[in-house]
Length: 103
Image (cartoon, rainbow, N blue to C red; front, side):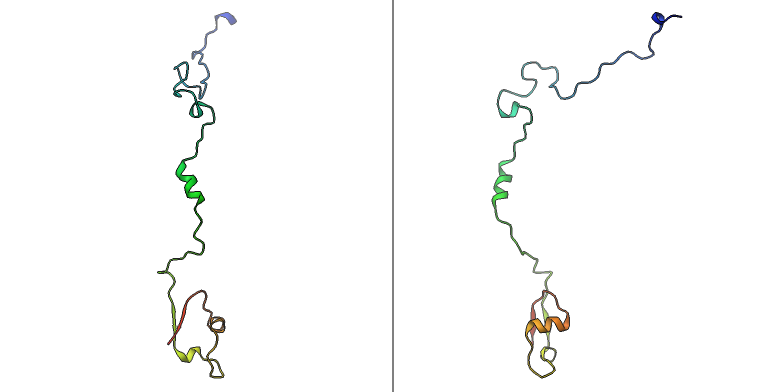
């Protein structure tokens, strides 16, 4: 057996060329000329640009999650018997970011 007598088990396969438009010729399935026919055609949707120009709603929170705290008058009073400020009541009772109602 010599080298010129050897045969492959599988036939030769050509490498696949990716993304060249198939077997269509001329425009290769891209339509006519213009922006959409060019390489790197990534046009942004018009609606997205409109949405991006709108201002964000900062500080928006669900009202159903934030429930107010009802405090009786006795708890709102300090040791002197005077009504404390809301910031002092929050510090003393450890209330964060809720509405305080004194009844």
